[in-house]
Length: 378
Image 1 (cartoon, one colour):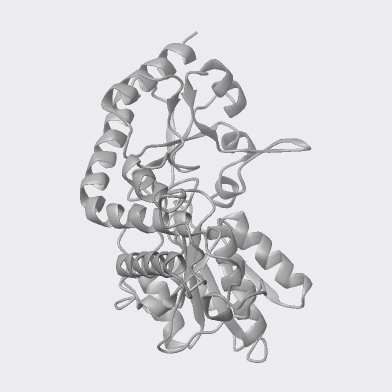
Image 2: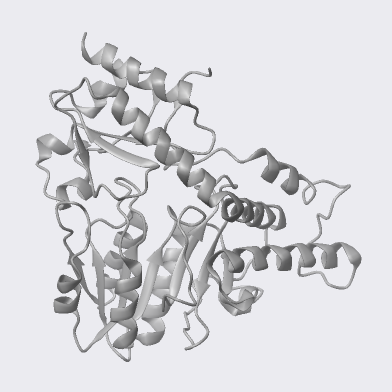
């Protein structure tokens, strides 16, 4: 068993060996390393065929049209393009945006920037279980609301928002709806033929693909448009210029293809690991799990009263986990996600995020739980 035990899959995942093998063909002199925009020769044509194949895999994951997938450098860029790009084109219709206090910083910081540019943003508080009460959304909608942005699976708690219901609310009012699916793509099914979602941010490195590549789904019927943030050669329908990284794009596509193929089996395995881990921790009577009990099982946020997260990780160096707090220049700050859910500063500072994945084993789960119990009893 390799130490430290990796239980931070929500931060990033190792690349699946099958994905690595696929990527290598598009990197070396013996493979299809050409520029997919260089269509005057066979090297570029082969790379273009690979990109087309990859785009079809991503589209298939969410039941989208191939032309609705735009390549980016990752979910953060996809979020920025979705929010800033749509705000720029729809500002004549209105300048009000709605999101949640528990969103990823990519969304929150983009909204903060838009506020500096004259937009108004409503930040909705979740219920104590992390879920959005849709009556709050309905109350927040104004005549000048142009965009709602809500993440599918929360990166700290695993809470799954009801994006279908939210999509029905926004579609009925002709308001754009963006979903940050960085933590859910390839893990939980999304079908855009059934859910009227307008924009979806996707990535690869949370689902056993490479870092540095992502995609943005942009609905075509009814037509949604975004203004480009990056200008240059006019790639990606003019919405995202720059030479396409064929090897990374192919890696993302293969990762998502495998994820769709293995989605049910992966989910079942990870759910079993979560339940086993909690059962193993049952001797610790005072711990509490943060977030809705029906959340994504691969992300488990637990408060260990009496010990701050920083001290917990010092006592358990054989576990690679994340704190529920962010380390800032001014010191340890409590997680804004947990604070928005109603936890006190002291409670939030005791939170640890455990996240499991495809390569987590039962032996690792058992060892981790036993290590925690042992170290906390010292």
